[in-house]
Image 1 (cartoon, rainbow, N blue to C red):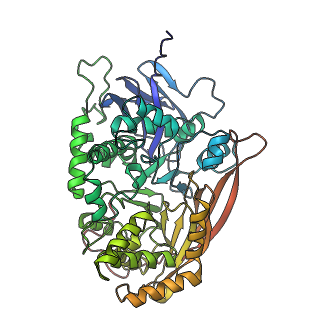
Image 2 (image 1 turned 90 degrees about the horizontal axis):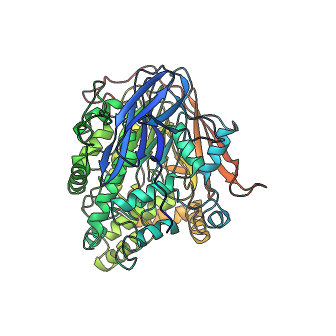
Length: 587
């Protein structure tokens, strides 16, 4: 009988996660307990692993770096070098710290399925835009961003690839609910491995810092759509195990890397790890103390976060030179009470309110779900919310609830109260009422499997000094079906939008928007990755798609789908009011 080869000591990663001017963090998954060491420019930083249900992880925090420095790095486990891999034809991974004198550039996108990069996988899922961008970056055909923001659906727990289904079948019957979907943390760990194991993408993630936030498919389609959905899913035998496993996996694989070292040090779970003299997790090699096991505390956190969303915050913010990126959790903290629905609960709303302020050149608000939908789609979702809560009768309400879940009518527009409150925050900032107005305020989103740009109409007429823009990039790799493309194209047209607006007015429950907007560019349906470049008060946004050439799907090319320049207004030097207590930005 042939022996099973041992697992490589480095199971997954390294992922370069947080990046600042003088700090960075590097994440890894290992096959066993170990001390993980990152070496760069003659210095080294080490951290011991922690365990979750028999899996081993580490996040190594690097400090004391030079702003604007750009140096290769290596990773070893104990004395054994494990990265970069021997014989790789890709450039060495690098840690490139932020430099305030350098214009900010970052990529963003969402919705990426883990499918093979062969002919069959490409026919079904299209060219992976992330992988095409990685190859172009390695060959110097595109500029180097400061980071990439993944705005949801990094993994699909409810639509698993064939290799994942084989893994599940070896553990339990596929006839056992939830069938081919992910059930628990162990299955999530394998799903993340499949999503991030491709050598080219693995290289990209090791050398380009990343910020992430979940969306529904990271847990399950329609996650927290409505109270009816919530009650129905909680009647299943498997949901709690799935939800807790998904939140624990998200904390391990995505969330901790989002946090700055200062925020990480305040995290209630991270603070339980034994610390070395520098405040990081202590190395375990040669230490008689066992590897810390966070299984129990993380599952307790997941249970509490589900019952009381204000018990833990998944949102975060980063300063990028003279710009600010605020990434908002638009899934876990929803208020689903039919008469008082909101995308954000009061605690999360207050947190966001303190960060939507001026005093930066550009303010970016990352939310997995588009804030500004095409107007026709927005009105349709706003009407559906009114009907589903029973304002037009119980029978129509039940039908509207089924429709809401069937076609995903659960974006910001379907949580109208929360939408209006956030829009007021943004417009106050745009008018300079929360500090000097930024040149632009830009929502960055994904989710909808097509890309577009929308903008407030006549923002100056409302006193805005900032341009207020919505930029959507979706999917990275999960194309929309032709039938849905036709429906989206119809609802994106002015004539369809006008018809739905008339319906909204007739309902007398959906007011005309105080600050109307229009879809100005798109939609595009390619698998895309977008890049935003800050050029003083101006933004240059480019959507890139992978292309097939003579070398086949293994070596895709990269093409520009669309490039847009947004000429922001020069920020006003004066603030019209003094900042009140709590208005100051806190990272």
